[in-house]
Picture 1 (cartoon, one colour):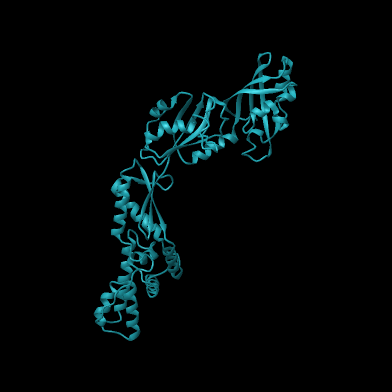
Picture 2 (cartoon, rainbow, N blue to C red):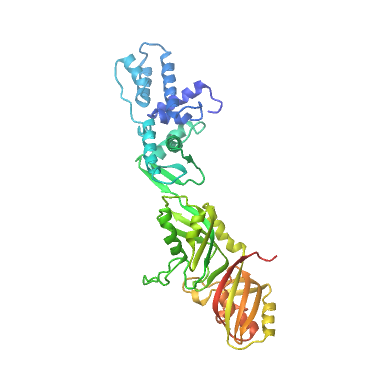
Length: 437
């Protein structure tokens, strides 16, 4: 209908009403891009009124049987003012049928009711922004599509858009909250045509760093196959205990830039993480208050600020972008001289290491070979058979296996150069560093 005149628009409206019963909203929605500052119901009623006026231009007396049949169909499918006109011309009442698309449900009072219900739920929440979503029943969707196929999509909008817009602007007016189309605090979902409403409280995200100053602390709760908790504390449990009540949340989840072994400490600069606060009733707590609460004990977390959902992906990408620095306490099976330590440092300068999946995790990971680079090693003797090594390497290197060879599954390794067996006693992650050029 590109470049259509008013007469073309009326012809299209009459054509669709000749086939489908449509309420003011569902007729007006077919021409939603025409007429500014009009609701679809106003647009639909205006079209029906103009069609009735055009029909009466033929005269005020009952016309031929063909005109009577046309008017009877329009009265059934469009309702007022055609039902009144038919009564006037032919002295008989015609009952309007329910709207083919919405079943007669759409109305301004319905939008008011839905907005009132959603507003009641939002008042219980500490929300600044919201968004209205609509789940459309399959039958309504198919019927709307069927009607649209008759006229095309030139001027139309969907029933979902109308509900979202009309309910959304009412909620904004009542609550003073702003709609957000990218990252709303709350998503209110209207099911149509059942008219049920559900509230999806979006998570709060916090970004920061954590230190793990003790050993045998898992990343998340470690439950054995027997249902027994293997380690007394996890980083996630620490944060859940501290934050869940504060945010009145359902639970706390964590997303970190990788994870260290359960018996390794995370010291130095700390490991980046994003904390996800699930279904919080309270959304804002001062960062200073959070850090006072989380800076304690063998697990310590520093929150840098609030984050967005995309930061979950960003923090996980740190692992691939950055190198890592480890400190390892190593027990040797024999004495080595300073010359061997110098050889160790020289050998592992920008050295590519091939590792098969370590024996210790084969039960849960596929056996594959992968290559990782060691950028540098610095070693210092602490005793006749004890040394401390700093390893600067690509993320994903199995550092323990670099020390003990894992029965030849890692090559080369420390014993390759030192000439004696070696065993890692303690492992600390010192932090992340830039990869060398």
